[in-house]
Amino acid sequence: MQMNFLEVVGNELAVVWGDGHESYYPLEALRRSCPCAACAGEPDLFGNVSRGPSPQYDARSFEVRGLDRIGNYGLQVRWADGHGFGIWTLSDLRRQCGCPACASE
Image (tube, rainbow, N blue to C red; front, side):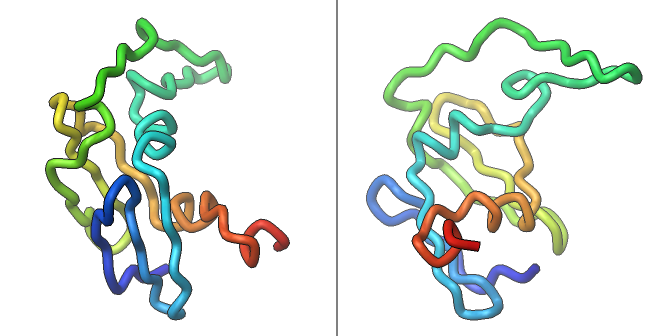
């Protein structure tokens, strides 16, 4: 999975993938689906998921301060409220594309 272009446009993250497909992710939905252990929980050896307190969001929670590519496999978003722990794998991010072409697959 390759990501050729990445930019925040308004309240969405725009991604152009290596195959030319374009995906647009609403920032609020992206933040609410943060995969870090604090937000999504962390499974133990038995599959039980431990979660901390529910995240408390404010307007800054959905503003991007930075985008960091992690190797050839991931993307880390730095949010204006200081959160920046989640790493979306590129394959997981692509699976979250909500465009009609991807939704029908």
